[in-house]
Image (cartoon, helix red, strand yellow):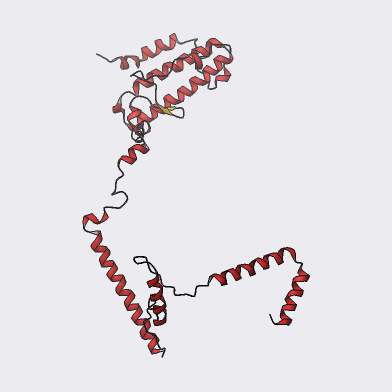
Length: 281
């Protein structure tokens, strides 16, 4: 028994089909939606495009078509979607309904809105293609930031370095480094000393005791200590201390200079200085 496809290709079948189509001109969809000026025809072409989209969406559900065929089908569907948008805009211009506003959203077989990026949609098996799945994976949420109170819970003496020596590792390392630095400093000092001796420079290495007290000073201090009360702290003056009379004279001189600067004119002060110079004061 012949197949239906073979029956359709027979001469009789083709002759019969030609008779049926005789006198009929198959109308083709305009390439541009702006070429259509009748609202019923625009509605017709929109329904035709929707039918083509439905067929291709059914075909793209088959993952065994291969990557290249699936990509081609997905591109064709997106192209038909753009064309459908043009016809909907033309229908609105001709006074028809606004399908872009009242039309249903495009959903997949699971009832979810078709995912896409910047107007390009992915259907059926196209969503599982390499490089496409990563586009729809949501990034994990960043970990929540800790509050100041939570951060302070982890702060103890070890945070401030008070327990660095407890492990028994840091202290020996510090001692070793200290000995090394001291040895380097001593070696540097010896080399500088030898260099100075080689140049013929004499060194004065007399040790001076800054806390030494002369005999005369010790006698005076001993007399003062006898007069003082026992048990009080004793001080030794290593610099000359002015007496009360010298302090009063210095204050009087300072006061005189302030008064002269305040009330005397520059000419008078110059004359006074000149007189002192002549008198040898």
